[in-house]
Length: 464
Image 1 (spheres, rainbow, N blue to C red):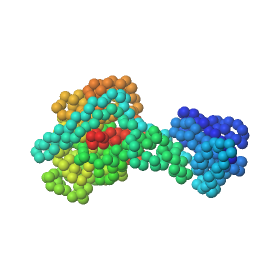
Image 2 (tube, rainbow, N blue to C red; image 1 turned 45 degrees about the vertical axis):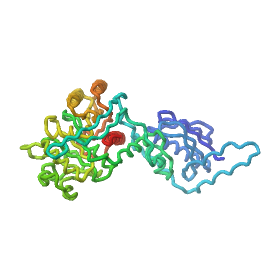
Image 3 (cartoon, one colour; image 1 turned 90 degrees about the horizontal axis):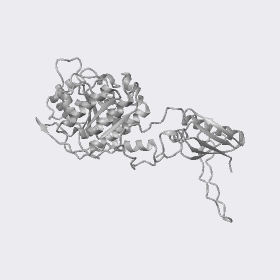
Image 4 (tube, rainbow, N blue to C red; image 1 turned 135 degrees about the horizontal axis):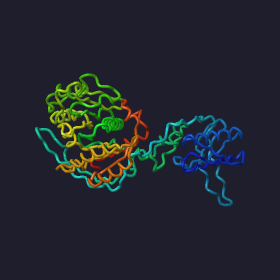
């Protein structure tokens, strides 16, 4: 029987107590992250195997992201899952032969690089009783065009759902310590059942669902500087990354044009804007070829398309008829339109984008001015005859200089108004930097939060 090195990791995942058989002593191992700690564990196991000249069994338990596991480490630095231990034999019973190990010379262990903390489920409900039932969406036709989406059943939202059972949940882990071991060593360790990775897989499965019809997602808050544009861009990137290219368009619905063209990864060329598209195709009821539509869109790295607002033309504004026209054209060849609105709730384009939205997403930084503006807007929505409020998701975004008391007061006010879902996003430095956005540059916790939020958006659209 090979010597066994037992490792007990504390709950914080930064410290471990390891019994080393060659020294008959207990050592303290530490790491800045749990990944670093596991690297130290395997380095100690390699040294033990080399000094003894034989295979070492490593039994690991505890930790925040490390399930109990048994591994074997050879002197040549090969590592593999240890064979399952046979149950105790009754007296006189034949002893089972130990399964043959894989021959030496397998995959060598290399240092698992620290890529930062694994994405946690960053979107959460600050309050759990925001659960008014969703109403049906009314449809109104004016001038031959739908002004609001067709009626669809809506679901009650009681919070972020527990992980669903989805195809592929038995696949090897891709994240966390298990994911790194699988990638580096060719193992097939499964993700833990209640791990953040499994929760994200469930969310991804929901996001890829077929939608009942062309859908509009509107990002709105009349207060400027609250992050509407970077939020609209990142949400569009998340949807396109999972649903596929040529499925989502993000358009600038500001009445005189906003900053969308300045925040996307690929800058649109002159003429790739809303006025040019409307002028080239004056009749939205006439079919437009995909190639003709693409001439006025700018493809982004994640597969989404964007269309800039009015640029350099302050003599006219984007009105309600223009918004209806634009949506009718995009709907011919795309599944989702994300509307990045301006700061004027009296503008026709703003009013149509909110009224016609299948989902209204309201970003609210933890500042009194931003929270007050959002609350006033939502109060106005609640006073209207439509059911827009039932399709509203408020996203509280963290940032430097936050006032924690703003969140408590804001959530209380939104709960009183009847907002179905309030979610919280972690701080994303790239949003605040003013730089161009690419999904690959966002922090892992931000991408995880966006995935969870996109899941809720798709559930709202589909009435799930």
